[in-house]
Image (tube, rainbow, N blue to C red; front, side, top):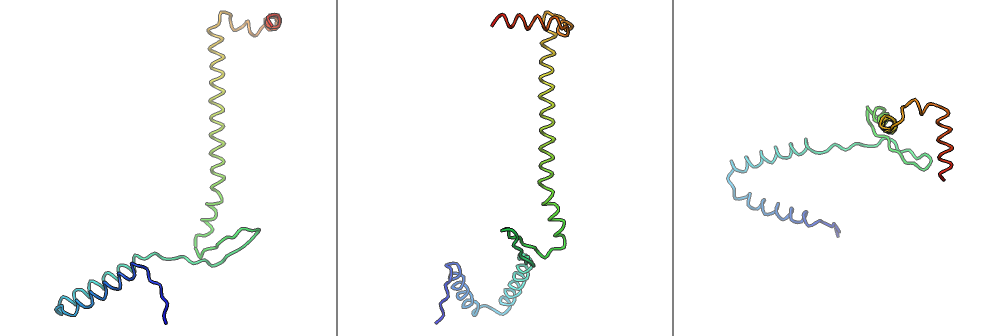
Length: 143
């Protein structure tokens, strides 16, 4: 006994094929030839459009990591690109952080410069050591 489990679409396809075969018996010869030619073209087109499966030539297990080695001419190029991708991301992140830090520093300096220019005291007063001593004493007394 043959225990094959067929999917519902397989059963429907088989039933449809039986009905078409029965109806094909009553068709004229020229119609059956055109149908046969169309069927051959459809089968040939399907063979061309089918996906090509890649096989794995080597499976390696090293330190608990399973890696597949495909039969591929450009395998070394693929591995190099995959290996360099984290380095490229790291470099891009560092450039972004550097640029962000420079922008923040420029904003802070611009804020200090604008405060100095708006203030009543001339900028030379801030460079005077006696003024720095005066500020320390006055700020210390207010607390």
